[in-house]
Image: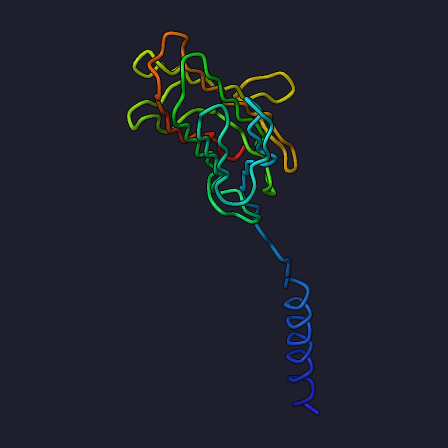
Length: 188
């Protein structure tokens, strides 16, 4: 009987400890979001309207050979999106316009800081570029009438347009190659 009195408090302590340990266990799944920006619905809109498909789209219009390709815009988190634009055989007064949308296909809000060219002719990285005083390149990006910086929630898009113009006094057969993208980060 004496053993029972000694074991009873010990068993009660063990039962209480096991109940407390069960109640303290917390399990909750946790996952993080991801950033995925894509260029979508890209089109050459001047001198004619031509949708840009998968892979490079090549169009010969008004003596010019226009090539537009969209990189980093496949479904899923595939890196930063880039528009590759190449126009060959421009003539004085020629114009090419490419437009589309920059869409947040990720799961978290993204702040678009600026949209600009990564390279033009290998050396330029700013707006309103005038290459050898022959070709002018400009870009506009808007969300609800606002230029960057702005925030895109998941599923939201911003309108993007790239203008390439040969000046009226440009040399004949000039060409331009440009890589266009937007700088962005997770929104605060």
